[in-house]
Each structure stands twice: as C-alpha cells, then as structure tokens.
View 1 (cartoon, rainbow, N blue to C red):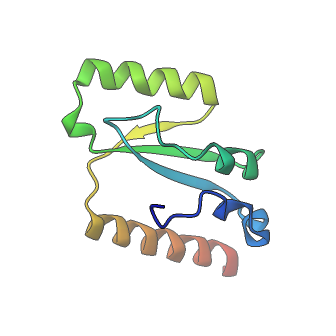
View 2 (cartoon, one colour; view 1 turned 90 degrees about the horizontal axis):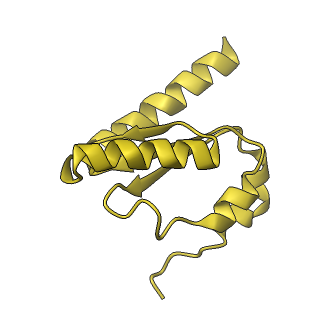
View 3 (cartoon, helix red, strand yellow; view 1 turned 90 degrees about the vertical axis):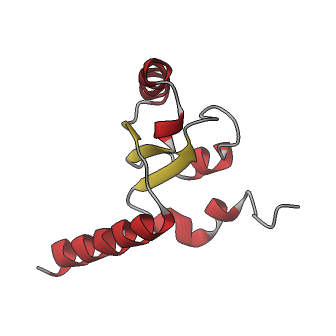
Length: 103
C-alpha cells in the first residue's frame, strides 16, 4: 500500500466542498488520477493543474490539455509548482476564500 487511501474523498466532509483543484503530474496525465474523487465531487467546479509541465514536450502538452479539458469539461492549467510555492498558493487561496465569505 502506498499509504494513500483512494477513497478519502468519499468521507462525509467531502460533500461540503465547493470546488476542487486537482494537481497531477503532467508526464503521466491519464494514469494515476483518482476517479473515485471525480464521482465524489460530481457537480462541483473543478480545475486540473498539470505540474512538472516543463518536462513535457510543449506540443504534446497543448494537445493533452485540450483533450482533458474537452473530455472532462474542466480547465486544465500547466504548471511548474514547487512544494513551497504550492503551500503558499494554498494558504493564499484559503485567505481569499475567507475574505470573500466574511466580507
């Protein structure tokens, strides 16, 4: 076992989620994604970040983004995010959501 529970999104708290930001490795965009999560978050807005996009051929990356976007009806954004930047983005997103809710 990898230590990751593939059914984590099915917990009751997942139902209260307003939107989903999924991050996946751009080098393997069609494998390893949690399809249980897609079902658990059905009907909620989703964005797919394809990280490590700098390691993929730009022409292939453009085709991959378009294919996923059309098939799954969600924006796909290629990224080059490091762990520290990811943590910063998450904290900024939480702040923005809190600001919008409380103001």
